[in-house]
Length: 403
Image (cartoon, rainbow, N blue to C red; front, side):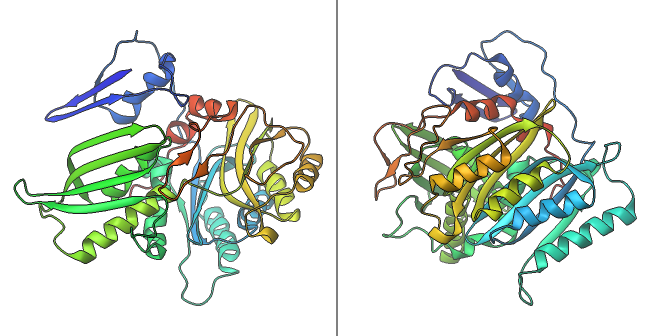
């Protein structure tokens, strides 16, 4: 489907499909775009009413620090003890750092936490958890934000938190040994631009992650071309800095290369994906993450939300004892026994040969040295499609302070 966005002198044309590569037919997905962007959008579909719930009824918690096994479990346990009901949460890990955004409401009666004394107490208890494994002078942060002060897309905010936490500094930039992502930055002297070219494995939200990095680093994109062929994606951007200057210094080009690679890597997580769908209740996230921790599983990424009376979550887990390369079927079965039959395996690690079957076919891709994936394009589970349909992370729970 062709989508045209035209605002003033800005013109963008997108050719889009669903996550399976098929034609878009769900009008609710298409009509969500103007709610997120604001511009005039031309599309060949019938208009219909789209509703979205406000996130002003929640208090947002933003946490960054060193990644370690059991971190999300300890955080959620403290919130349960303080009778803070988790309505949504998302956690990313990258380069040994972790960023977590949790939306909570008062356990008694609901609504945001408004009492300043209680807010201070919640923040103090969470700081104790985060600081427990930090050395003197090491970076960490716990912030409670007022949803009335502004709104930022949740996943963009995660990019901002990890960027501010300097997670990109461990990336050496693109070089001959770079296996997945290739970045080149060259001058276009006749037009006064810097040209950024990226090649990486194609996946959903790749464009979003790249543009977030450019925007948060205060680069202005004047022209762009993005295409995908098979499992590879190519992106080209003509950019300048906000002051109109190009990237003249090698240090500037190196940092931009680092940040672009980090932005793409943050969503690429290792581990076995486990989906949880059960009745929502107070302390549920604490119980689920405790079961993972007590069975030796570390969470590399998590997305949790609710839909009506149901709680829905996706967790990418690894076994700490195996260095993240293996999750035994016995461990998964033990977790299932403790949590009930509401947990299902969606994606298998290449070495995982357990008896638990995913709800939909989802073959892992085999990466080649050039960053492409062998075989066919990745398939998506029913759970993935359900998440895309809900869009709860990007709209219903998108409040935090705009930095």
